[in-house]
Length: 179
Image (cartoon, rainbow, N blue to C red; front, side, top):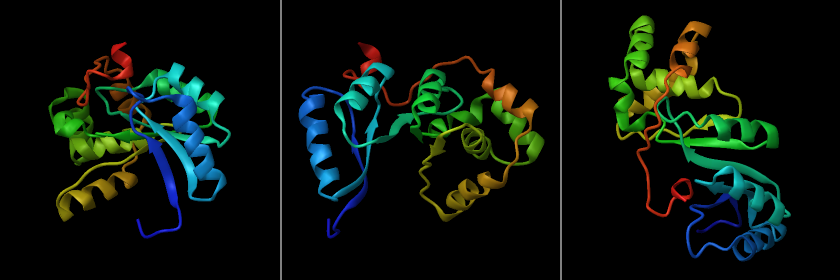
């Protein structure tokens, strides 16, 4: 990689042949050697997070998961809050499906912004959540950054919080929520 260390190393999926003791033991060794500054996981459910926290000597700092208004990850948000973890929200605009969600569109129109900006601002309003949007154009990058300045009020947040759908964009056959 051409660097002495990495800031954050993830276990990307808890899928076969993932073995917590072997994999996380190797992460601990890298952490102890100063090659890894922070350890994270991705796509872990609460039971797997419990196992990871029990096996790791290094602190577990993040769980990268799909999260957006159509997949609000309430249980994982509460887990992150209780255990001092960050949720790193990938697919934060649901591949722009948020543009077709009436609750999000209503809030966007009210603030004269895009539904994607509303989705990002909503995620930023959540405790211990950081979105990682993808943007192919400079215009979208600027729009994503502008979402930091969008101040959603309680009514806006309640409208989006009230969305009761569970729509996954990334749903592998080996995903832990399918077990």
